[in-house]
Amino acid sequence: MKTSRKPLDAGQDSRSLAGASGAGVSRRRFLRRLALGAAGVAAPMIVPAHVLGGAGRVAPNDKIRLAGIGVGGMGAANLQALAPYCDIVALCDVDDQRAAETFARYPSARRYKDFRRMFEEFSDKFDAVVVSSPDHTHAVASMMAINHRKHVYCEKPLAHSVHEVRALMRAAAEAGVVTQLGNQGHSFDSIRDCVEWLQAGAIGRVHTIYCGCEAVNSGLDQLAEVRKGRPVPPTLDWDLWLGPVPWRPYHPAYVPGAWRGWTAFGSGTIGDWVCHVVDPVFWALDLGAPRTVVARVRDWDPRTQGEAYPKGDVVTFEFPAKGGRGPVTLHWYSGTERIPRPEGFDPEEPDVKTGAIVVGDRGMMVYGSHGASRVHLVPDKLMKEFQRPPRRLPRGLEHHRDWVDAIREGRKAGSDFTSYGGPLTELAMLGIVAIKMPGVKLEWDAERMRFTNVAEANQYLRTPYREGWTL
Image (cartoon, rainbow, N blue to C red; front, side, top):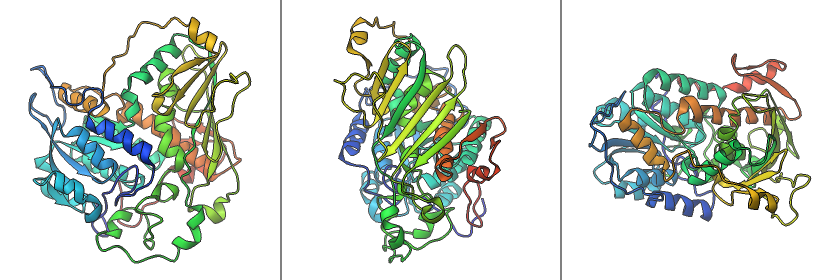
């Protein structure tokens, strides 16, 4: 990799590379529960003697040697969840202050600000990498890990463009490394209820999905202010934080805390939450790639306000018939655009603010964030009469543990980059392209990776890198 100067990285996925404070208390509590060992994190591991390791082979009962890129906030939670199975040997973060607590927790780990130096100087000392930096650096960091044949756990969304997603999918498949997207709900028991019930025909043939998240990830209110810039905090290496993004003045509206609301760094609400909220139906219905995508936004002009995401959007995906199911239309609602109550929705049901209403020809299913709360059928009569199918999917998993076990067993993890996590992320990236061209219905050719009816849209399939940066 050529760079104009040593690049990037650190911070965190759910807040900021240099350690943002965004999201909210509920998310922090949720992540803390994950890190403390929900679903048996601390259970002893028994590994069969024949385990293979593929790239970065690990002896059956040795701890995996792990490096962290972005170790504040979400990165800290990921490391705590993995610590029972791993030796934390290297930590990389661009902000010493935000990373201080993690540095203190693992005092023997080698410290870096620049992950390229970490790979150049220390790559023979670790087997796997967890990437918890902001969206705009996920692909660059993950690709370097893959190129060094390291197993990779990367926070969602996997990348910042369709091009980056496809590049990571190809590279991971060719390198034979074990990968996992950080959409933790994919390993929850409740998502397996969703999948099994839908596939058993609990609501008949699914034709429409209304889903979304009420979080507002938008920098619109500070659009004029950020252009003035502010002094860079002494603990932050701003140039490394920017990574492949063209240089701009530092402002606290970006980091710590709100980088998700800026198109250069984050992926808005749709990028933040599709990998959680759409996960159950993407799995159950084998949605794959959409045929068309179109977005509707309010009070936002991409020509003058395109540096920040809108405060709300509605994105509609049309999926063709596939296998035994018919065509499916999925409506995504972000921020100020709230999930509607479909015709026939039980008046006793509360509004769904983050989650989904799945509509079939016999009824509806409702689930919350990550497919992990209040999974039930509507109307109530349908729920009472429903005969639950036999459980066929494994229960009692934990997402980080699944990745570790997959490394030891030489298999794919549940949300690996190539067959699942990548295609799921791509859906969000296509939605972002549609948001940048509101009102234009785009026809997508997934095989050729291009929009066939509007050539202008294809420019948004890849993120421009500043000089010297490349995957």
